[in-house]
Image 1: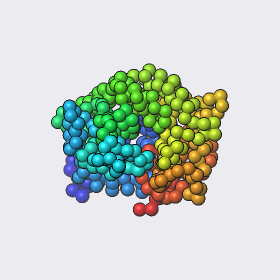
Image 2: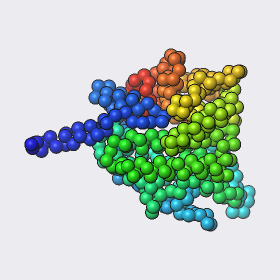
Image 3: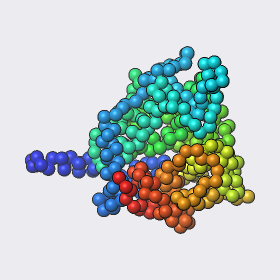
Image 4: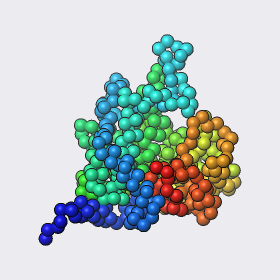
Length: 408
């Protein structure tokens, strides 16, 4: 049987979409069934269709970018391997009062542009994660195979290829010139690894992401989990009492679930994360350890998002953090209640915040809250957010009231 040449591109698209439509993906942080419905309803829902089309535009631009690798850095401490990840503490600056500026001094909330240069790995890591996030989601929603092929190539370059892969540790994270070559709090730079694992899961219907790729990535993550649990840097991060500790728990629990070690995830969330909620959230919902920062709203939202991700992982591990509450009322719901009034564009945040907060940050938190708690206030707050809150098409990952089409 032959077909008209004019039908070739159409049949190719349909074939790709059918490959992507194999079934709901197995996701840790999002509802795979919801995302499959989003894919299937894109032709009928204008808001979903618009977000998908913007996602395709972003993915098209990424087809010519990367891949990225830790071996491209230009600064390496003595004794380190080029495959070791290395970054600079973002809030540290040369001391103008000392010759040569050493040791550097901290200016909380003020990012040193040096940290984002090619001399270090942090910006490459951020771009790698962003590319995989966009390309994998675009492939899942459209079935356009070049997106999956590019995402797979980017993942292989960073995690799997012997010539370019990153060693599974963060011994040299967030260095401070004149003080240290690396710190445990550098582990915050891999806070989004669970999201990256979910994006890789979206690729599992594509021939571009092979079985050996899946095994290799899970092996890398299992090795990184072992390092998080056993290394001095990992133990230091575990002892932190602010957002760093929260996101450490998220990483440990997610990596343990993917590594087939649910008992590690269960113990982490049931014991440690519950203690963190009790210690970090006040009965009125304030998060004092974040309110003391110069970007207090950003950090309060960031810490709360970490707790919400931990609660989502708890669903997989058999630990209910959504309804956990101490005797004096400390809970995730109280933390949400405290921040909810400031999702209103007309409200003024009364604590230090030296940089603007993207409305998409509120959108992400409120979408999770609207789904998990039967309180109409969260859906109402979502509806009040300005259109730019949905400018990032990744809102498609979370169910919620269908938002208006964001301005292009």
